[in-house]
Figure 1 (spheres, helix red, strand yellow):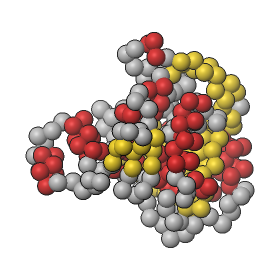
Figure 2 (figure 1 turned 60 degrees about the vertical axis):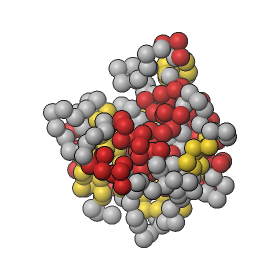
Figure 3 (figure 1 turned 120 degrees about the horizontal axis):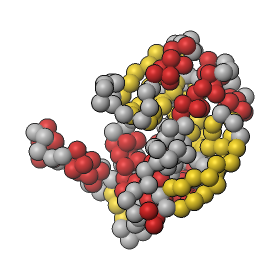
Amino acid sequence: MHFKFGQKIIDKIRNKKVQNKEIYEIMFDNYCNINTINNIIDTPEGIKFKYKNNTLQTIKACIYEVFIRKDYNIDCNKQSILIDVGMNVGTTSLFFANKDYITKCYGFEPCLTTYNDAIININLNENIKDKIQTFNYGLGSETQKVNIKYNPQKSACTSIYDDINDFGEDVSLLENECITIKNAYTEIQKILDLHSNENIILKVDTEGAEYEIFKCLDSTDILDYINIVYIEWHKYTPDILKQILLKHNFAIKFIPEITSQTYGGLILGVNLCK
């Protein structure tokens, strides 16, 4: 397995002789091992993922963000749990479940095809699969059924909002699904009731629904009991998310920093009162 970057690759990246997409491909191909016979991807951490030929690029992108770029990497000396809202194919839940300080992960994914792909990936990792509990529904401000169109080949870009959804160029690939959304406060409170002595890490990557989710949580005191939040924000201004987190005593950092050309990114929030 070829898990170390060669000096020539590093030099090409430093000298900017490759484009961003090429950097992503180079880093992935030199980090992971792909078994094209069994369609299995192995990371150096020992985590396995199953891919279909039409979902390989999506899974590679998710692994790149979580395992190579390490968007969610933190160290902790206290037992903690992860609440993974927008689990997708299970990348972030598996990344955290592999850490010794994580005792449980709770993953929410409303799209059935994507949810089933996550279950396959979780079950491939026998040593940590029991740490992860999954739910085939999403979170929002109220319990409801929502009809959506989505492209199974672009599961990481699926949204309940058509102006955010990335359908791709081939509309013949689109599928229709009626998904279930449940009240974010109610579902998260159930989890908090089970883990009063552990750190709570909340990750939300819901392609636009993050605004609705955090408005719902802001109407209660539940954010006061969460230690760390990771929010991927999309398209709209993140100002409302910033104000909600500051109101609940979170110190926050935008990754990347916000500019007039920024249309999405990651927010890291740390609760200073916990």
